[in-house]
Amino acid sequence: MKIIKKSDGFTLIELLIGMTMMIILLGIAFQVLNTSIKAYQTNMAIANNKLIIRSAINIITDELRYASAVTNPVFVANVPTASPLSTINYTLNNHQCSITLDSKTKTITIVSDASTYQIASGTVMSLGFARSGTHVNEVIVSITVNDNSFTGSPSTSLDTIVITSNLQ
Image (tube, rainbow, N blue to C red):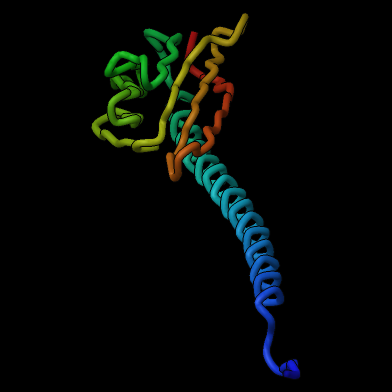
């Protein structure tokens, strides 16, 4: 009996090799895509953190720039270990004002004149105030935020020096 070889279609070996190559290519594509998504998430989280931190620093420095009689100019509050409310008190235009970090809500609350407002809600990891070396009219403000947009989201920190015009 004569065996006739078919000329159309694929053999089982050819199909298995093709499927193996396809799986390898899909695995490589998945790894590249996964890496790109992680990089995108990280970059977006950092950009969001920078937006939040710049806004918070701008508001805090505007408050402290004309402050006088800062009663407790040195404290650092980290969210997991801080007392529920860490506060810096100061006088602005003859009104008692305060900047408070609530460690439970991760929010900075500013009470200025007759208004109260919250900034950086749910993102503040630490907030610190310190006197700047020999200059009594300088206050160093340090803030760290994390938007927690995904697991392992990076934190961003910023330190700035506020030169107060009325602080003695």
